Image (cartoon, one colour):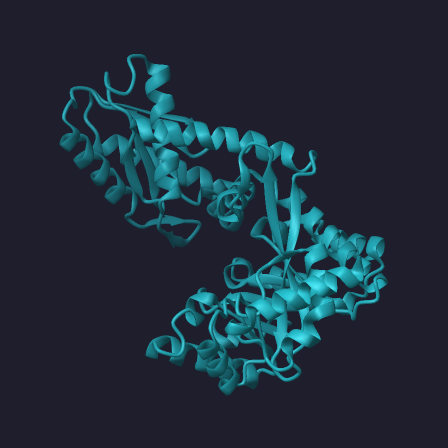
Length: 417
C-alpha cells in the first residue's frame, strides 16, 4: 500500500505534517484490521498488510475497498483539512508466490499498476502484470542509456500563419529509435522518463539540439522561424532551468526572440507564485511563452492574467470534431475570444481537415499545425519543406494536390543536393 501524492504534503505543509500523516494512517489501518493481521511501514509512505485466513478473493476485495474508504476520510494536518488516498497491490498465497519475498514483490508490481491506472484503487497481481513489469524494467534500463548512445532525435512540425499562409514556426518533438525495439512511441517513454527523473537531462538535450538546429537552418539561407520546445513538469520545477536556457541560447547563438517555450496549465498551477517568477525570468530574456493543451486543465482567466503568456495552443481534443460537434465549437470559440481579449496569439493543434481549418480561420485563429499542413519531419526534411513551401501554399495546398506537393518536395531536395 502506497500513499498517493505524499510528497505534496511534505512539500506544502512540511515534513512534520508528513510524519503526523503517517502516524494517523497507521492508526487507521490498525483500528480497521483484525488482531491476527499484520500492519507494517516498510519505509517512506509505503505500508504492507498481511491478512491471515483471507483465502477468498471477494473477502480481500472487501477489505481493500474498506481500507481505501477509511483512508479517504478527512484529517487535520497543521491546521489544514487534508484528504489522502492510497494505491494497493494484492498478492495471494499460494497462487502468486509461496514465500514472503515473492508475495511482496508481486504485490508491489500490482500496486504500481494501481497507481498508473489513476491511483486510489487496488489491483490483484497476475501473469500479465508480471510481463508488463518486466517489459517496463527493460524499457527503463534502455532509456537510461539512450541519451549517451545517441538514440534520441528531434522531428519538427510546422506552424502555419493564417494571414500569410507561410511557415512561421516549428515545434520540436522528441523521438526515440532503439536498435532492437525500433521507434518507441513518445506516449510510452516520456511518462517513464518523467517518473524516474531522466526527463531533466533529456529535456536539456532537446533544448540545446533544437536551438542549434534552428541556427543551422538560418546558415543554410532559410528564413528564421520560431522554435517551440515543450517543458516537462520536472524540467519546469528544476532549479537550473533558466541557466539551461541561457546555455542553449549561448551555444547556438540563436536569438532569444526565436525561442518559444511551451508549458501546460497543470504545471503552472502547481505553485502559482513560483511559476510567475520563473516565467517572468524567461520572458525577460525576450523568449516567448505558450500555454500548451489549453482547455484541458483548470486555470481561470483571473489566474491566466498573472502569467506572462503570449500564446495559447488549443488542444487537439477540441479540434478533432470541428466544426460538427456543438460543444467543441463553443469551447474553441470561447478560447479564441478569451485569447483575443488578452492580446494573445491563438494556435490550433491537430488540424487535419479543410473543414477544421475553415472554421478556425473564421473564428480568428492565428496559427495552425497538423497533418493538413505537414506531419512532424526530421531536420533535413523540414529544410526541404521550408524551401518548397511557397510553391506548396500558393494556391493553398489541397488534399488532392498531394502528388504535386511530393513532386515539388523532390525538386526542392534535388536543388539542395
